[in-house]
Length: 386
Image 1 (cartoon, rainbow, N blue to C red):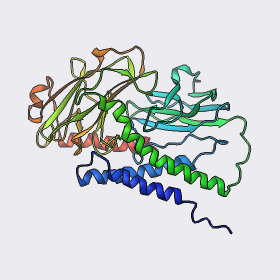
Image 2 (cartoon, rainbow, N blue to C red):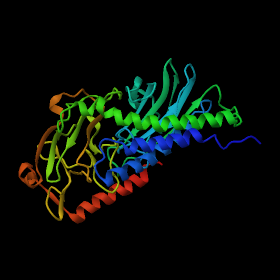
Image 3 (cartoon, one colour):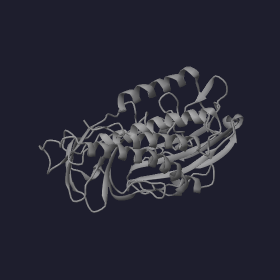
Image 4 (spheres, rainbow, N blue to C red):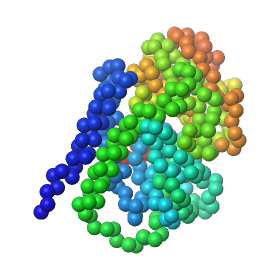
């Protein structure tokens, strides 16, 4: 029997290199930051192994690489992500049953995100372009064009409490019914090598990515709605980053958009990932937020409760110890384009002044806020995959 003890060596070396990258992150200030870095590393390891081992180009499947235990790329708390690898010139059939989520979108990417550039979006559309039967069933055929590498599907939820997941799968028409190839040493070694590259590459990519976009903007000044970089044709986003002291707050005012199925805001950490959206309120959709009588939603980003001790407000986004971080607003399944007047207006104020700066200040009790968190926990448990 041949010696296989070195077959995992590339991945072992990649983990060691990934640890060095995490420990050397320039934004680490506290032990808590480093602890979060090692938790982030666990998700990166999980993603790398999953993407390297859970697929076969001859038998494609949709892989769920991004979720609450494997966060990356300022992942959207309202989305379930699916990825399938493609091979140029091959015909694929995508089938499914449409759930009741606010949006279901498909995107074909050329290449991959890297520390040097964003991936190329070659095709992007939502389910409005599909023929969907009365029972929700649909299917479409796609022949992978030159340069096509990955199909990404996003199922996005506006109302976590009521919207339900659908079903989705992909088939390669020329290999359906053909048994899988037997495992060989070469194929196994290649997968460990791929996992190694994915691990270090993803960390380097997401360290660099926000500097292409978010950090080019002035602090505490998110952009007007614009086409999402590398994103969907049916999506607009406002991107930025925040910096707040413990006694400061950012009031973000944005009109509720009635011309889209999905609208949301989230904040994230310097690891360029979502923060705990399950047991804290770090994101809100328009279905979850309170809209004021003037048609605007007013969100308050702060470390301390903006309503004072023992109280909160419905539209509070908790910083969770992150003095700096990412900020993003999204609009999807739009019926019209957006202009600057649809985007956010931002004001930085002392936390103590928040009640006076909100024209419709309606605090909620500790018990009411806890009920909101309980609802989030139930929804994440019911909806998310891992």
